[in-house]
Amino acid sequence: MRNASSLRDFLWSDFGLRPLAALCVSLPNLVFHSSRCIGAISRTTPSRLASTWLWAVLLSILVYNLSAFEQETNIRFMAKVRFFGSGLLVLLWVVSAYSFKPEAARVLKSLRLEPEAIVLPGRGAAQHFTLTAIYSDGTETDAARTARVTSLNPEVVAVDTAKYQFLATSPGRARVRIAQAGIATVAAISVGNHSTEMSVNFSPDVLSILTTKGCNGSGCHGSPVGQNGFKLSLFG
Image 1 (tube, rainbow, N blue to C red):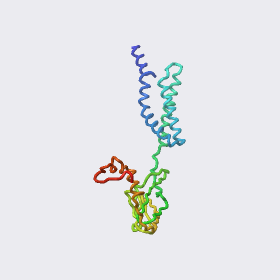
Image 2: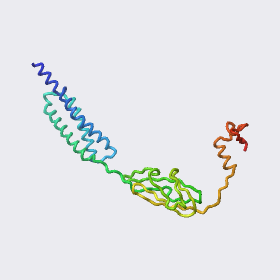
Image 3: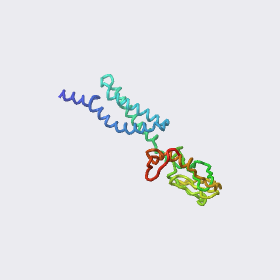
Image 4: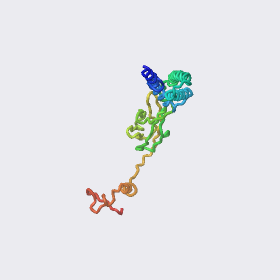
């Protein structure tokens, strides 16, 4: 009986089932609150710093409690440690519940069109554009694919949403409207009266492209027999 009693006391001591039971009860709370504390480091506030500090202290006390020797001289001290650790766990839960409130959803504040001033020289000219959405939390995202861009004067300027560019159709002034999530802005575009057709010269315009692409090389159309019935001179 004495051996059985000693074995029972040993199993329920700080080396046996009691610390294991305490660990099973405390571990879910530790994992839950520590993950929330660590996740808030990037958005540090005084209350969140206090929550993180309390988590660290509580974990240290729990580890000490599991590893300390149960001696006659420290029984009262260990009881105080357990009481203090339990109180810290409750305080940690309260601080975490207070400081980790759901963040407010960001709100779209404005839309920015770039370039800001668009002047097209004449009919047929094109200008690529970018759109930026600016939110209440200061973040900026690309809005070219999500915003709705329409020309209020399509006879002057057309919008190619697939290529993100404005196309001049006739001289004059036009306005384009950009809208997304209830936010809208209007930009002005000027189209000049440059009606002179651009002439294309074979030597500077076409030949340079063929040379860049390697079309007049010996392995392509520059070979002695050409390629697909088309032959190019290697010497111009």
